[in-house]
Image 1 (cartoon, rainbow, N blue to C red):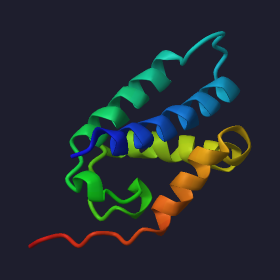
Image 2: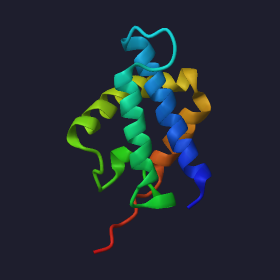
Image 3: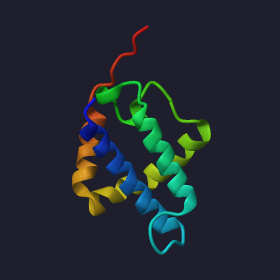
Length: 109
């Protein structure tokens, strides 16, 4: 599985978490503890993704590999940061949009 694919996915979620944390938590540099924990969790889930390089965007994925609490947290982060990504990180935002248009792989029974 090519590492570059997951580096891009990780970069997108890092930037989204950074936008959210800076706007919602009073931290001078970096991320607060809660956002750091969330980001580490997301990276871990990406590293163990069932679909590998055929991974769809998480919102379209038929497998919910996040625990309910973490899924709710990342959904809040993405809903807030997603629209802001186009202004702050346009290339990553466009990349994410193209990935969301990709067909979702079928699950093998």
